[in-house]
Image 1 (tube, rainbow, N blue to C red):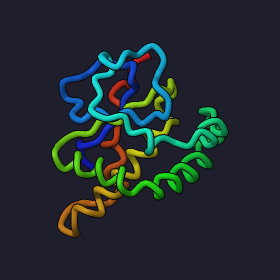
Image 2: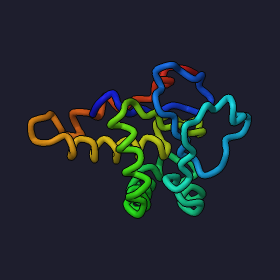
Image 3: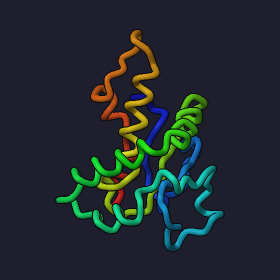
Length: 145
């Protein structure tokens, strides 16, 4: 992918290089004020449905099933995905989430979907395999406790 997209916990400090900050949770995160969140957008329509979120419960054993079901839900939101793609054309987009699990959350899946879409729109002259970009979709707080 590109350095145009990354994931971070909403509880991590705001960084100057976050670019366009988008919360992708359906409910507002506990303990975070709107001012502290420093959001550019709260994109609830791209959050997993309440039913899917409750079923998943951040259980790593349900991760693969969650990823597949959530991708199906995202396919129903082309306008919202297009808005984020437009923001990626302007610069970095940081997908924010409140889950404590940095590897098993909706922002990770959404970043994969956006990376794939980005790669497909880059054209044949670019290295556009989503696999090539997998290491560039990162959670900048992954080494924090």
